[in-house]
Image (cartoon, rainbow, N blue to C red):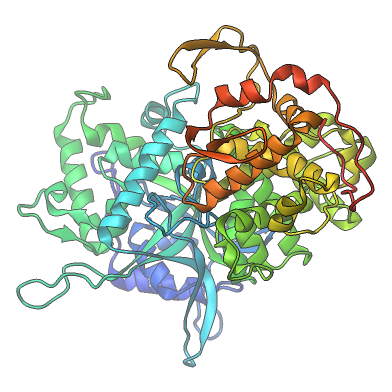
Length: 607
């Protein structure tokens, strides 16, 4: 590493020999089990790597010294972290950041892959060939994208979403970094992104770009990573997949992929700019190099090992989650509720009460058809229902051990003292995770339909969705289970109802004939109670069946239903129609008690 001075604050990579010595020492450290390629990618960014190494042992082997290693424990598992000083442009902002997860279509939506867009490639544990020729999991992640263009677009979408989220911060993070530098280190996990398509060839028959890229994804410090790179005028996509020659002061339209090469030239360019510029930090006219001086180097924590590499994704997310969920820094209600639910699922897996595949599906990381009890003939509506009901039972468990783990993950009172607010928090979590199986998320407060009896847990009949719908006209228990646990989400997914946002008096809406109407305040529980009104039973069942039919027909617009429950194609079901046919005042009338014709669910009904 060239010696840093006040005139040349931006470090160039050390020699490849010194990088190799650092890589060998990391791999020799107890508990380290990551791929060599991940270390080769990050080594050019490490400042003075020898400072992290201990003395050689009797065999001449050097390892990371104790002060440069931290062994962390989370509710999802353990990991080994290296403490380093890194070039400020290093790191890659992560599309899997939970604050922006709702911008992507989830793999848990059965319609993904049928012409939908904005899906994020799922993250899997990295599996590769080791020295003896066998395949094994190591402490890294991997994902597959169609091509380099998709990789760059994912990075751009994540950057734009993070920029919108960062606007809720009470101060300007970028200017704070310019003035004060970065005070807290970020946490970075290695991930390899592979391309499905073969790279294009140049005139000599050589690939124009690699077929796979290693990057160090920001688990903690996504915003800081983005803002630092914004100050440097690079993007995370460029740090991951190569820097254009023009940004290095070269002519031509080549892209430089080797970080040792481009970082050497980039630092030289910055040091030249710094020496020639005035000490002006103005964001419009000031020098880039002067504005970036305070973040020329930053502290970073690199994940380099774990005894359970197949759970690495959950481990790193769990490590970061509590910082942002308690309190909810920069989380909107949907992403906060989803993060809480994933905390619960991660703890279940770590404690052996749930298998990894089930947790992946319920977390929104894998297709529903990968569940053990999903069958090939299940339609979209039944797949969505299968996942939603599993989530419901996991968030309102009867089992004492699960209750204890849930209490730890959500910082709740003991079960007998569970408050209405804590029950509502669970309900929002269930609702937000359920919405991942639908094209658009809804306000998770739609799910707040449970009373305090829910503290005892929820038990369902176990009947499949088609069976419940077929029996709902005459079976009170089947009808009640549909209304209590399905209707709100189905109606919200089509925009028929919404969570009560306070006083809606004076809000205008467009009626079926185009006239402007005023809609009075109405909560979700009131809408559900209107469905229960005995005189509307046939119509309510018809409405539920039509919503299911619309889901199974590509999430088309649902049709209105007649008093007898028959769908009326061509007449669009709207919020105005629902309020007219299931009026608010009907919610004051209680339906007659359920008969003994079928087994009623032993779970509590809506509040």
